[in-house]
Length: 193
Length: 193
Image (cartoon, rainbow over all chains, first blue to last red; front, side, top):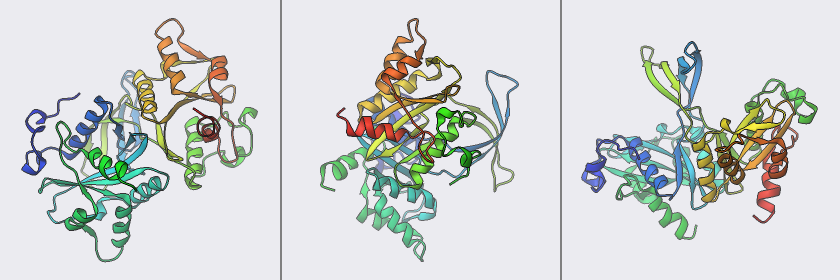
């Protein structure tokens, strides 16, 4: 397991204490997924960033060097995998706002993707990190889609109060900075759906 | 749906007739997945190629240009998604050999990944295209792992006869050049496992 910066310092401390505020959210999720992987709890990976490659230099054959490429819009979400036999699919986002999450941070085709995989039996959601509050919420794709449709009107964001009402707060566990499977256990697998 | 080259010409013709031999295997799989997607049969996507980005030019802010990057070894497989509520995970490879598939084309961590997701309830396999024969086989991850372990001895490849014995041949269907879900239907979902 990779020893991320701050890992030893923060692994026992609650997020709400702001200890992890400086830690990159993607690293926090990756570290959590590595814990799940190392302990054979779930197999969930981050997908590579989609890149359009334009030009490659093959002169050194042992290491082809990409010399021109551009970022592409992702067609799906960042994370997917399997847990307890269920297909898991989610997108993770961070916001500096203390009051709401701007929906424009999620692309429409990602909302469509989350909705569609759910219709096929997946557990799909977004995870939003309110970095300045040190609070993390999981919001089911059904609500993501509702709020996304609403954003075509005047209301362009999901308020913190709405995350508190419709989402589930994710707590940090020992060595799991974003222990979202705890929420999945409690609200998706144990409770009637 | 993207109109791939040759699509109109080949969509009604059997692979074994060699009509598709010139078609890129990745395009054939992508075209099949698009058919599944467009018809709401399954949501299965190819993951982006993993790239290590070293240098990016931000001078034109509207289109950040990657000026130095390298291919990374994939940590998982190329394709995953959901079908009938089941998590699907596979790697697809092409060979020019008429008699066997060299196992070195699959990385050890990919074999491990396929084995692990199966243990968690996935349907996982490889698809191998014998391009010069126009034949395509699906081989379950259990056999992939067995043949991979064997390859640490003298036998470095999986023979065509072994694909015929332990795998399932994939037929082309109308608008589905590599209709692997037909095999999944027949051997994974209908039959007892």
